[in-house]
Amino acid sequence: MHIALIYGGYSGEAGISKKSAMNILPYFDTSHHKIYLIEISKSGWFYEPDHVPVDKNDFSIQINGRKIRFDVAYIMVHGTPGEDGILQAYFDMVGIPYTTSSSYVSMLTFHKYYATLLAKALGVKVAESLYFPSKNEVNIEKIVSTLGLPVFVKPATSGSSIGMSKVKKKEEMSLAIEKAFEVSGEVLIEKALQGVEVTCGAFREKDYIHILPPTLIKSKKEFFDYEAKYTSNLSEEITPAPIEKHYIQKIQETTGFLYDKFRCKGVVRIDYILQDDELYFLEINTVPGMSEASIIPKQLQVYGLSLTEMLEKIIREALNS
Image 1 (cartoon, rainbow, N blue to C red):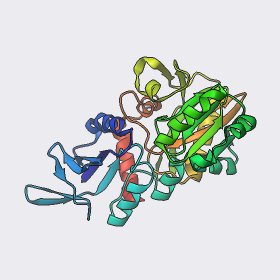
Image 2: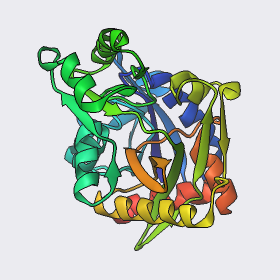
Image 3: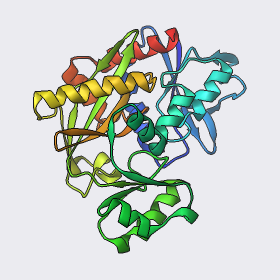
């Protein structure tokens, strides 16, 4: 079976995407699959390391005069176009199965504001927030009077906490908003919750949702930002989370519920804040990191499933869906 392992992308997460792809590459079952690394960038789509261009008409490559089409696209692109539905829509058109959620689910979950609206409608608690679809609509007085301080200022469409700031003082707000708008054309501002951050992975196998052990995140920075996520000494990630059993159960039940209701596919990671005995939804990552520093591989280890086994289950699920 020919599998395209796709990485890169057009966002600031391209480097992490490559690390994720290279980390999982040795774990594919090569007795049944041949893996082809496909890098997507603004300069083009190429089969690497030979730098062979991809024919986008049917997502194929030519090697030694032989045309190769892929049986499955394993999407490891964080950010756009792999996590926002664009790549999924393309594969739907060319008729190639892929390993993530559908295009419309990816688009919904990638947009932090829309995702929180749906989670809230489903009965899951979310932080109080204000959404600004353009710079012209930003009103700092309204932000402070409605949400108070501190708040988190986030690009509405971005991952890995890129462009995100925690604002404690009103005079810091303008710079934080400008920073967020540099990453996304839309900004979400959320009331800062005073609790602990936890995250939980899940993936589907036929009618069963594997729910992984939750992880407790302790950042040595103000919050779990891009630097803390990918610098080993700036955060502590403890799996399984050292919290009471009933909290573990609540996190896992909520993760399974949201995975199902959002119609997710493939492996996802859902982030929460646990505050005053209540669980608050933050976001769904539909292409979570899989580098050595990432959380999902650690959760799998505690769960008792190898990375090879999970990859195989996800590939089979893509073929059968």
